[in-house]
Length: 100
Image: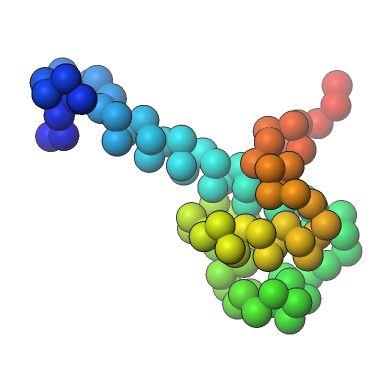
């Protein structure tokens, strides 16, 4: 089991630093994928059109949209550019929150 920065091992059920970081990464990749999908649909683009414009395979785009892959920063910039969004906007929770 990984040690805490203090050199002690986490107690049973306690998250170590890598557990917290990996949870954050997973949450951000899901969030990016959901927001990108919404932006793509709003822009009237198909995954095939995204592939044609970015060179990223349709299957790869699909997995990103489903939060299954952790895209590189270069891929995120390319995808954001096609839907005319800033990468930071695609990482914000507010895009997929429906108004009350």
